Structures are given as C-alpha cells and as structure tokens.
View (cartoon, rainbow, N blue to C red):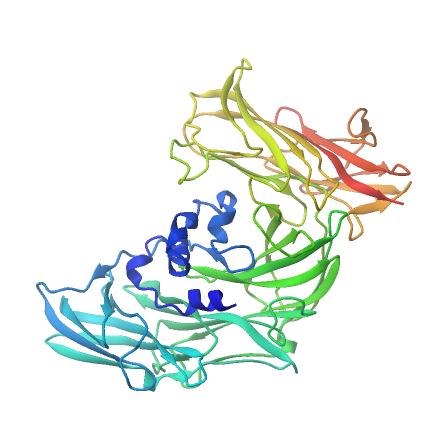
Length: 563
C-alpha cells in the first residue's frame, strides 16, 4: 500500500501529462516509463500499459483526449508573477511541489517547480486557473496532501500569489457500514476552459487529502472516487464499495464522499475457476465523462471459487476487470488471466452476477497494421482467452504458445508472428482477399481447459485502415469450477458479432476433437443462437463454431464434466 500512496499523492506537474500512462509509470518508478504505453483503442491495450505497476496495483486508463502540452514558467516577455507556496504548517513544503497555470483562454498551460516555497517567472497577461498540490508531514509520521486551487487569477501586472495549504479543508470519506474503512481513492478537478472541460488536477489520493473550497464556480466539477472494504483491507473482505460522486459548480466548503448502502447497486458476485485452485482479484474503474486518466483500484477476493457483495454507484459506466492467478495470489503477469467488461447499474438494489471463466474463444479482434517498433501499437490484437462474461487481453498468455499467420487468396504466407492473436510490424498488404489463422497450445497451471485453439478469419483488404474482426462467443451453464453435469442435456448459446445475418454452425466433441457431432441451432435473439449437447459421462467437451466464409473457430476442452 505504501508504494500505491506514493504514486497517487506525488505532485505530478502538467509538464509530464502528454502521455498519461507514462506519467503514471514515471511518477511511481522512472525506470518503468517505457512500460506505460497504451494503444489507441481499448481492444489494443497492452496489459503492462494498463497495469504499469503490477496487477495488484492501479489499473490506469487513458482518457479519450490527450492533455494539452505544458510550458515551463521562465523569464521572458510577459507579466512577471511570483508564487509563494506554504504547507499546512505555514512553512515551505519539504517535498517537491509544482505550480500549474491553465490560461482560461484555452492556451497551453504553464508549470513551475517550487524550491523553498518560492518560484517566479513571466506569463502573458490574462486570467488563469492556478493550483498546487502541497504535501505536509504530520507529527505521527503520516503525510497529507492539500490541493490549493484558484479557479480564476487575473494576471494583468506584476503580482504575487500566495498558495496557502492552511486554507484547505479535510476531504471526508465515509460509508454507513460498521467496520468499513477506506482502501484508496482519488481526487479530481474538472474546469470548463474556453468552452471545453479540462481535467486540471488528477492522480491525487483521497486518503489524508485536503482541498481549498472555491465557492460557486460555474463549469467547475469536483470529483471523488473511493473504495471501502472491511477494515480497509486490500484483500479478503466479503464486500467492497466502489463509489464516486461529482460536486458540480465548485469545491464545497465541506468536501466529502459519503456513501449510503441503500443508494448503491448491491451486486452479489460469484467468481469461478477453470477447474483448479486459483486466487481472484480485480479493479473497478469509473468512466468519467471528461478526458484524462481513469484509475481502478485493486481489491483481492482471495481463494476461488468465492462470492462477495460488490457495491457500485448506480448510473455510472464502470470498466470492471477480474483476474485468476495461482493459489499464492502472486498476480504475476506470467501467471494471471485477465478479463474485463463494461457495466452500468441503472439503480440501487440487489443484482446477481456469476463470472465463470469458460468456455474460451476469440473476441475484440482488430488488425491495425503498421510498421512501428515494439514500443508502438501492435499490428494485430485478439483476446483469444475471452469468455461470454468478459474480453481478455491479447497474448502472451500464461502457459500458452502459438502463431498468427496471414495468407493471401492463393495461400501464400504474407505475414507471420510467433504469438497467438498478437503481432507487431505488419504493414498493410496490397488490396485483396486474405485469411488470418491463429493457433494456440496451452498448459496453464490453474487450468486443464482450452488446451488448443484454432481460429480462421476471412476478410478483404481495401486500404490500410484497421479491420475489426468478427467473433462468436459461447455461453453455457457451468458450476464454479467450469464443469457441467455428466450425461445432461447442455444448452449452448452462440452469440455473434460482425458475422452478418448467416446462421452459425455448431459442433461438439467428447474426444478432444478427433470426431465431431453437428449440433442443430435455433435463433434465440437478434445475435444469438442456441443448441443442445448431450454431455459425456466423463472428460471434457470441445466446441467448434463457424460462419462459412467469415470465421471458423475451435476450442479443445471448452468445459469439463463433473464426476
């Protein structure tokens, strides 16, 4: 928890926010800044870009727009302005501090690094939003952070501006449940500048946080996000509260996040396994409506299968992920499966949710092309380990090897890469018809399932634009260990995406794909089809589905048989 607080409480100047995920990595560990890359779309996100500090720490998502470039405050033509910054003891801050200035005409912001509580420079005459995040060491060894915020400072002539953290008020964070405590949280400020919302302050921790009230300021929003568990424990709590609140119109005199259980969606969530002991955890990230960094805080469920109640602020778009790892709860990149989904709970009250990580299948596929190096976007990204509950990330996967191969209409290999569902440095080929084949073998320590996958896509290249790939997802009733009842009639639902109006075909196998039996399907909705499989007495069921001329996919050992 200590290194998490270091990241969020650090005074990150706007000079560094031109690449959001890199800022997060650099603020925590400058040596890992290169791991903070984030691809252009969520489907193309790299695991280490979203979790730059490890899977047990924050999930960091880049907003829809890039922040403005910042300029260093320095001597030059303009109005001379001097800043004095004081901590909550009335002294010069001991920790590194910055002052940030956002011109209210929409020009690029300025920043200045404060030394011994003072800094001066020159800026064009005009009106600015001015802020500083000021750390103060307490007598008990804890450190508080105060956001000193001035929504409008008129710089018309030589001036001195005092940013005094003693004016800041504590930010309360409470929940009406005995024994619940704050795990972590974030403080954000969004101000409308030149007609557009600008996130002027973010990545500031909620614990031991203070802020200066602003009074009524039209177009300014004060946002708080908090995570609460039993005793404030990061892992093992039978419940977790993921709460957000937006205070529109300025920072209130008594700032706070006060959570009432009756106002929350109470989501009773069961986490399954792939058939072997596992440990489970995950993040909940609110999708704020404004550009900027979005943060999801980790909470661990513990040994799985497991059930806990998760409370969410309703009416908010949440990006949720959950992870199955080895029983030691190590959550290493090389030993963890990660899935994510977007959810919105429209109203308070009880909700039931069951997350079973099977059967696998490819989803969220995208052929991006490009000739950038390994530090850039992937040319191919497919979530090969996706389920009906959520999309996975692209390879590499724990215990899996394989290839991705692009062939032209004559069958000639045009591009190849040594990962299943991922590739770099694939320039767009000349226009024509192509086939993409992905093969994977898997021997994961926490799973006897999905030991092989084979998928083939057919598409036409007309230019160098990205090509979204169609997908077929399986959904079927399984127990918390991804097993079905022996000899039972098993209903399989196949949902389609971008496959056209054609009826999909479905086959099942009980001998690891040596023989297949066709399964008749009937329409069960706009993009859903169902069929019934007779489960064997033991072993596994493999599944194959296709839309001729579009997609053909197979997963060997899609689910296990109980008993």
